[in-house]
Image (cartoon, rainbow, N blue to C red; front, side, top):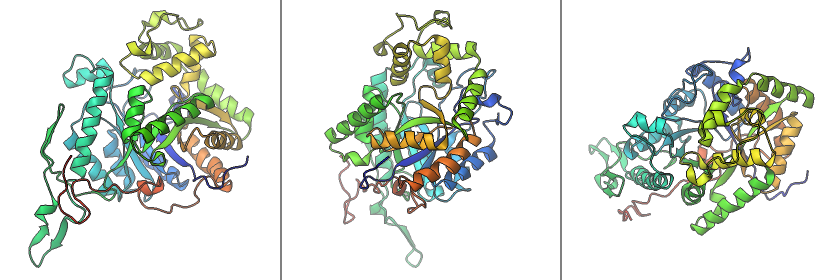
Length: 452
């Protein structure tokens, strides 16, 4: 397939989970079952860095997801785990999810600044708003705030966090032992933020980190989510089932980015893809089928019912989705994922059992079973069709699926000139071709600037 030589190389992120992204991956004999096994994650990080991937990503949520009797549900707090992964890698970016709904800006800004220092400038923050009564009740609330209200809080949260990261000028620390001056007091300032959600004085108790800010990532595809991404995000993780939907989403977010006065090249769109790779297409399809055979339909139906907001008994395994399920406007949870799943079921007239099978591989992300060449062809086709700046790689099975992608697919992408053969930068921002943010609280000659 021909490719425009002026297009920039694509970006690849490895989305890591305990056993893999397939619902039943943990049931295969070779799969790990303990989400607290740090050595497992260290091994995955080394594999991803061996492939020169831009970054790896750890998801998170402040609630026990699913039924721990049915699948591994224990996960480590991701920013803590990232510090361990920083110690066994030297270049790959390290991204973790943290919610603006159930954190405070000061603590979280400090945590990510610390990870950026520990890793030498490789930290990224996947900014999410958290839905669901289960999570709310872990923080003294009866239910989750409304969708739009969560995004208003998220916007102010990020405003406070960036002010805190800017509360130290880059040249604040002089460490002049002779004069007994460690830092210039005028180069460290309070932010004195006062807003509807937060009152924060500052400054942060961590000096400005190597990247200034961690890479800012966002994963919501609702209308509010797309506006938030266009205004703030530098990378977007998204689920798109078809090429047409991917192209439309890409254009939409880029146009919104321009409307907010930003360079559209300053935001990277990375759809998720769940590759199942075999030496032959038949081998890949058989592995995919083996994984599907291990799905427990009753458990998967329960999870689907919760996402769709309907009683479990309304979903009959061998019938299509009922006609009167709620609309997206009536859902306060993952609105974009709700719409994707309903449209997939309606468009392909899938029974609940068939839909569960389609979702088992990646919870709504595009799954693809084939040879390494076929996976590379799919990636290149989406990329050259204007649906992506890169991809969020979500191996169905770990660690083998990540190793297969790194050792078989990445070399093909490198041969086609689509992907780097060596790291050229040291920070995550450099990998994504993004600048280090200027300090908004201090002007170019070092005098305090207005906080705005």
